[in-house]
Amino acid sequence: MIDIVIAFFALGIIASVVKSRFEFPAGLYQTLSIFLMLAIGLKGGIALADHSSPSVAGQALVVIAFGLMLPFIAYPLLRFFGGLPRQDCASIAAHYGSVSVGTYAVAVAVLESRGIAYEAYFPLFVVLLEVPAIAVGIVMADRSLLAKSRKLVHEVVTSQGILLMSGGLLIGFIYGEHAASIKPFFQDLFHGVLALFLLNMGMIAGKKLGELKNSSVFILSFGVLMPLIGAILGGLTGSLIGLSTGGVILLSVLGASASYIAVPAAMLEALPKANHSLSITSSLAITFPFNVVVGIPVYVSLVQWLS
Image (tube, rainbow, N blue to C red; front, side, top):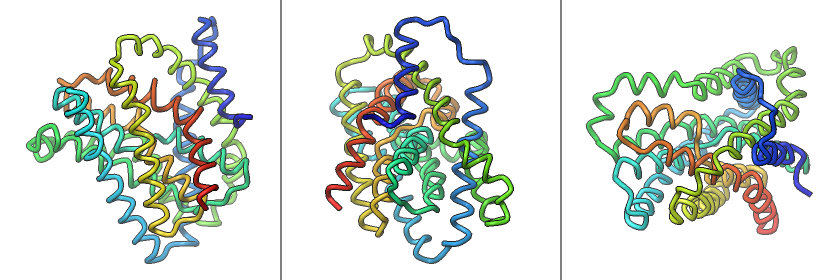
């Protein structure tokens, strides 16, 4: 049986496919996104206050290196096997080098429902993996853009994902256990909010299914193959730095995920000539559903079996 939060994602797809008249309330998606990002950041910051050590810093450096590596794997696949233009390759590679907070939240919910422990400070790694791939993608497209665009740097640093998760992480770290007064709101409601978020994501993904008809077989294949490559490398990296079974699973999930929030905004600013609909279709209509419905259960089972 699939996890209950994933069932809400399936319900959203069904609602879209049958062309239900149900409409997700305007602005609610943004509210749910804000809640999830702050909740993830706060939880990690509170845990980091108790677990900060040189070993965590060492793990963080390896995780950053892992994030930098993924676009260099995605780019040649897109360029030489897919035959896509350079800017399209760079944009898509950046999406797959970054992470999906929604996919991570689903993985956390699955682990907690199964009683699988993981490093409580893991949200630190989520924040660290948001930015490196964006810089790599820009350099791949045009090295001069990275030095010229101060506006782009500002856009990335102040983007919703980076600002809220890093801000929540910092607040949680400063206040530690003194943040107990807001825990009932951000922790007890997490799974319910995630269910609503996935309902909407299912509806969005369902609406984009029609766009897959115009996508090449290569993009469809890449949207499934690249997450598997990222998951394997994430699992190996997690084992290398000594993460728990739950931590290895989560790093596999982050390696398999593709950004559909922070990176699209940055790439739209940096690479206006790239085919951004191709990037979004691949990350949101192919990779996100694949990870939520198939990938995460497989990663969990495989890592547990290997452990």
